[in-house]
Length: 323
Image (cartoon, rainbow, N blue to C red; front, side, top):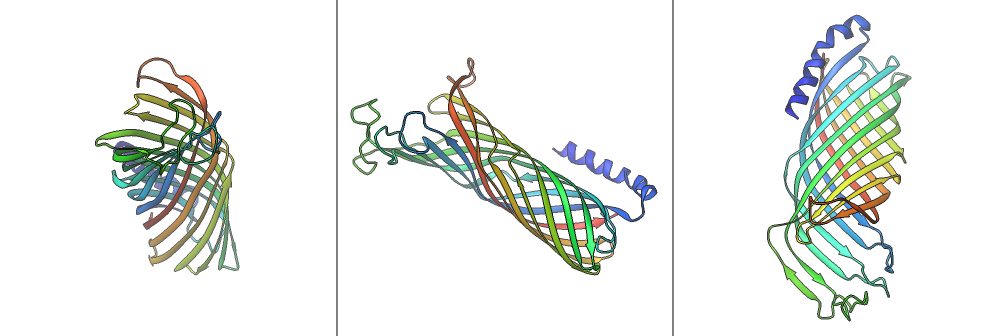
């Protein structure tokens, strides 16, 4: 990741002479950014012959995960005075560490929709990487209003470990019948230490968006934005260590929405301070799931249908420096 960052910075600075020759009404900007993510990722398994709407739901906390990164921007020098196109490239790198809990719920009964299994584990975030590229056009009105239309292409990767924890499992009576006693009726209880489960998600989507802003000269600008798209892809990988089973899911569709708010203040002609808040929500993404056991051995076999989701608040502080 450091190599990628260094390469992009070199390209960024080398492009400045080209920018000056093409159009002096445009500028490049580099924005270091720091912030945190708060929410959860969802891992879903759909039923084949059980009564409930879901067979399994795992919620992986992001509560919170701090990150660092940068944003590069090519846009009009005076966006409230002249229209023009713009390009943004943003990268965020999550800081590994504890980020809440992972909760696993199962509904395995063939006769009712009652919860049968529950477990809770420490959630350890191992990796988060967010890449967003936007291209669009901005239109000023009355030197105070700014309207932007754009396309955003995004890639996201999350990797978590569920460690330690405890579980409560309803009794199956008789065994292998698919009929369960209530989960509070003398259930099986257990606790464990160490790594129990590993899970990763990779997301891809392309979304149209629009933003509307109000500004005062070159000193202040506040923008609200909104994106929505059904063009969503997700690939995930799950390793259940204790069961020695491995799952891969290939999913698509659903809907992604992202409202956002950005406020900036100019500290000087070439420097601004930004505050950025947005909420990224993905739901309804689903597709086939494949299983193999033991982990890392043999071929995958189709084993039903899976889903994935995401609900994530992003807050960031950025320092924008124009060149």
